[in-house]
Image (tube, rainbow, N blue to C red; front, top):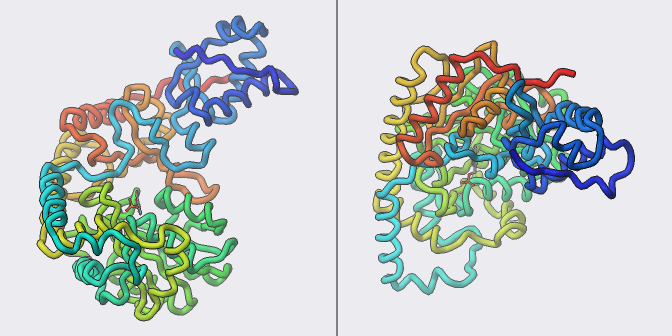
Length: 465
Ligand SMILES: Cc1ncc(COP(=O)(O)O)c(C=O)c1O
């Protein structure tokens, strides 16, 4: 139990509201953390020299604001999502319990370390080293890096050429460059109804309006896209056609054609985020290939090899790469040269492909373990996907499930984190099987907690007054 004691000396108005406000501020500042158990009503009342009923009213107010939950016989706990909700940041790294199955990142491979140390040796002995040190022009990247990136993107299903490539410091940087360069504040971007929290964060940061579009088992629905284009001035579509997170949809070719056709008819820019594409051995043609004049495609090494290299590859439509210079200038001027050199080397030598094959194989082993432990429960997974998507049985709501998992030391992500706007979130959670849980023992334990919870009925979770 924490010894949290709110400071309400400088807060005016009713005492119980002041306590609830102080709690919200203290959660935001990290003084109390998701999962922390708060003092009992009686203890806090005693500490603060207030009546128990004032503290009870304050806690009830905090329950109403979804900051805390009370479990009969167990106590009052800070909600797992409280920090995220209050700060608007998608994923709270401080929420992470001993077992982290909330964070989607690749499994750390010994091979990556070996490849990295070999690449650093090659670079340090190379006469190109001094070329990597200064600012360089063109800002979009060195010719050799752009050539390697173009060949990498072609393997992912998009024909492009080095002149169309812009090197980035990861996929989030690619998003930032495109949005900053091509969209003005208040313009409308549409996206999958469940989307990467990073996309929500960036669009909000750019003061864009982000609208979610309905999806089915094949991804974004062309009719929903068409309807949005008819009723709003849609400037851009942001979508993840491969291994969509969290739903794991892979958009079939016919669906890609239909979406591209709507985009062409309404003059909407396509922003195709393919961070998960490298998990597909034999990917379908990129969505961008069906609307090549107006599509910006990118991928990165973050999900499939290692995130620390911070490298991404962006393909602009022919003749349009210069349009992205404002966004590049507004962010980092140019990509970091040493990671770009390593990435280009890995692509040319086939190392990148080998590292991804290892990653896919390891994830396939992890998915098999999940299939054994979650046998009998309905969930969506792909043979080498980084996570699984688990719609919950009727008896569970996602927030209660996440809270219970958190109390048992397991972090998973509620659907709420991916919802765009105020539409209700599905009662589902994303369970990551990747590198945030490096050991198999931990992974097994985490999956067992998930299975146990699914078998149980939720505890009487909410305080009812
Ligand atoms: C769909 C999607 N796009 C982009 C990113 C960011 O990728 P990067 O680490 O390469 O910036 C993420 C990270 O979670 C993601 O899930």
